Every structure is written in C-alpha cells, then in structure tokens.
Amino acid sequence: MEESEKRRIFNFMFLAVFITTLGLTAIVPFLPKYAVDLGAKGLLLGLIFSAFSISKLVFVPLIGKFSDIRGRKLFLVLGLFLFAFFSVFYVIVINSYELLIIRFLHGFAAALVLPIALAYVGDITPHKKEGEAFGTFNVSVFLGIGLGPLFGGFLANYSYDFPFIFMALASFLAGIIILTFVPNIGPKHHKERKISLRKILKNNMMRGLIFFGSGEATIRGILLVLLPLLLAGLGKSPLTIGILLTLYIVVLGGLQRFFGIKADRQDRIKLALVGGMVLVLALVFLAFSPNFYSIIATIVFLALGTSIALPSLTALAAGLGRRYGMGASIAVLDSSLSLGNILGPILAGFFLDLAGFSGSFGFAGLLMFLCLGFFYFFATKQRGKSENDEIYIKV
Image (cartoon, rainbow, N blue to C red; front, side, top):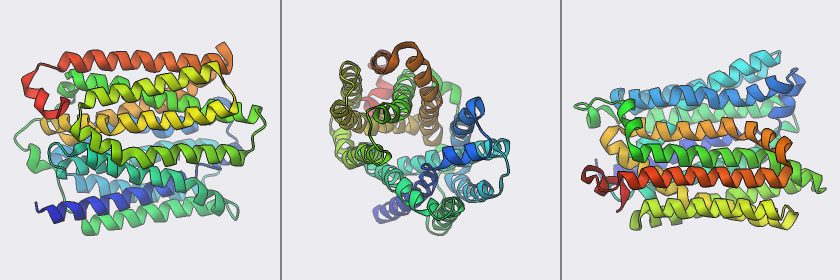
C-alpha cells in the first residue's frame, strides 16, 4: 500500500473517531439526571452506567478476533450505524429499565468501533512507528472527549433530546465516511494464521498490559467519582469542576504525540513504568494533602503519567498484534480498560466508606503500584525470548 494511501486512511479514521467520540461524550453532562428522571436510583443507576463498559468487556475480544479473520471495514461500518441506531432509542425510552437495555446495546456497538479503528491504525503503521501513530491517533479521542461535554451541555439547555440526536447524526456521518473512503483491511494479514485469544492471553507481555491497563482505568474511575465530591465539599462550583476536567483532557491530549515519538525511540517498557510511577506519586501526594491546589497539581501529573504510558502500551499491544492478530491484541487491551471502568466507581464508594478521601487516594495509589509491579514482572519475564524482543519490547 502506498504511503499516501496510508495517510489518507489514517486521516479519515481520525476524523471518524473524533466525530463519534464527540457525539458519545455529548450526553455525559446530563445522563445521570436523565436516568434519575426515568426512575433510576441506587443499584439500578450504577448498572445503567456500568452496562456500557460491561457490554464492551464481553464483546470486544471476540469482535477483535473476528475482524482479523473477516476484515475490519464490515465491523467498523456496522458498529457506527448501530451506534447511530441505538442513539435514537435514548429519546423514546419510557423507563430506567429500557435505558439499561439501550446502554448495554450501545456498549456492543461501541465494541465494534474504537478497537477496530485502532487495529486499522496498527495495520497501516510501519514497524517502529507505532508509538507516533497511536500517540497522534489518540488525540482524536481526547479531542472528542474534551469538546463533547461542552457541546452536549449547550444542546441540553434547549432539550435533552438534542444531544441524543446529535450523537446519532455524528456516528451516522462517521459511518458514511468509513464506508465511502476507507478500504477493507484484515484477512490478508492472517489468512495463514489461526487467531487464538488463548495464545494471546498466555503471552506474558499481554498479561502485563492487562494489569497496567485495568489498573490505570480503575484509578481514573475512582478519581472521576471522588474528585467532584471533594471539590464540591470544598465549595467549588460545577463550572470549576468542569474546567479542571478540561485541563486534564488538554494536557493528556496535548502530550500524546510527543510521548508517542518517544516510544519509538526509547524502551517502551521503561516509559510505561515511568508513566505508572508518576501516577502513583500523584495519588500519594493527593492522599497527604487533599486541598484545592494539590488537586490541580494531581490532575496535571495524572495527565502527564497517562500521556507517558499510553502510547507505549498501545504500541506494545500493536507489536503483539503483528504476531497474534492486530484486532484481537488491541481488543484485549481495550477490554482491560473496560474492566477498570467497571471497577473504578465501585471501589471509589468502598474506599470512601472505609477510609474517607485521603485514605481512598492512598488505596488508589497502592492499587496502581501493585498493578505496576505485575506489569514489570510479566514484561521482564518476556524479555530474552528472541521471537518477541525485536518486535515489541525495545526498538
């Protein structure tokens, strides 16, 4: 494939994922109130939010595997059109149980989108350029996350229906873009190779990535629950909370490409470990000084730590993908993030009841440190295996 064709595919994929993420996050500002207005409370309210990630956790590995066998485009286009279709049902549900079902179905559609898009990027990226490619591509996600809530909040001032309709139109437009401008990729790379999730899960590097990914997503989920509560207790307005969230996204998105390039020039395991330790130290700092200014510093350093680690983690998964199947390998990493998204809010409530805010942040730091230890153990255990060293451990 010509280099110009690869750039064209990358650009259209970037645009499609940005549009979809913009639509998905447009419903974030008011979805809790919308669910409560439909009668959700307690456990049911929690399940409505978890259903999206639970569905992704269940379906992503299988979809990733089948995309390696059947090709990417079918799954990605189907996912975007289903994403649009299910978005319409948010407008017509009449109770919280129907909303729960729609959230689960929406998670299934999402399982067909971002992991497959990342696999597309892995397919067209030259060896030793994975960090830069994924670091650049991640900007599309964080840009959508940063702008979506602002846009959705504006639309919701007029009607709660408008952000849902916007989400449907955005994903439908993204589907048209992929259907029209992006060729199919997938089977030709693995037609002589059996794609086995079992083999991927037996790989020590993948086991390390699962621990790191689930750990990082879990502490992020804990913080997304606890920091707004702490800030509200300090008398800060919702606008201040929103500004701090935007600060996190801006720092995270702004540094992705820089550390992606670093991941192509330096040891990816070491970069991931450095990023993980920054996360741990930021949480420990917050545990000992939970005030407004320490929260600002923590948010910046959390974004920095994730920025250092994420391109390296994705590049390591892509290296595995060249051996075991790009879609399947990226999907397993994505599932670890979904697991963390499920566990984070649950553990936030548990830690808060057990030890208050300071103790919760301390427990979160300890959890990340333990996951980092498992990542180091499995990643270094994989070193020395000649079939893998050059591919994805050190470049």
